[in-house]
Length: 250
Image (cartoon, rainbow, N blue to C red; front, side, top):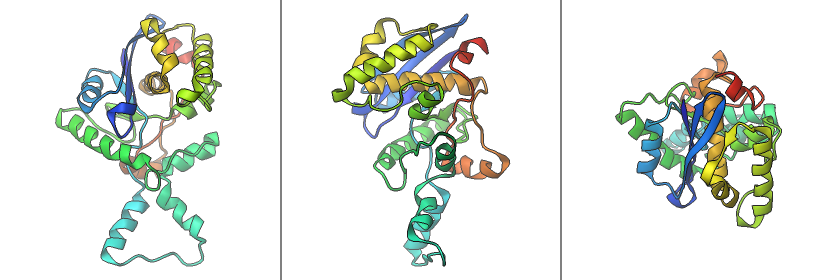
């Protein structure tokens, strides 16, 4: 199996793609590309058995309804609700709230934070994948699955904070050390130094690991009550097993 991880940003400059080849109880990092453009991302996903994208796959349904109502001049604030409570369902998707309940982490709001720019790019990529014949299921059942590196790392009992950006290279190095200790079957090959120098590259590797978990069915899936929203808003697949299961289950 080949899994791909995409740490997707609004522009290529902060986007990284990682390819993991899984064979006989081992995983080898075959390639990492930083500054990845749209064509490279699409081709990577097309060639993968499963791809994990670190980016919201949609907007909150209630936010979409709110914007449509505002355009028509028909916004009505629910009676008896404080502003923050009312705005929570506009700012956070169902999956964001589930991730917070299960991990204590709150994903960035796609409707109220700058990550919305990345999601606009992602929407175009998903449309292109569909045009190229790949099944796109925002619940994670198709070519791509939405993943959240920080939550994956926390669930795998690895450092999940404080390793971002150039000022935190020492922390990033410690994360790579811990990851290799926890997963001795993971071979970063000639790309280990790239991962130690770029948190985007490391996050892309984590996304590829999470894609493997999704391919094996070792992640959370929406309940019947959550499935409708997940189909339009997207669904963050959280690992449900220890890291070693990625090789022993396959």
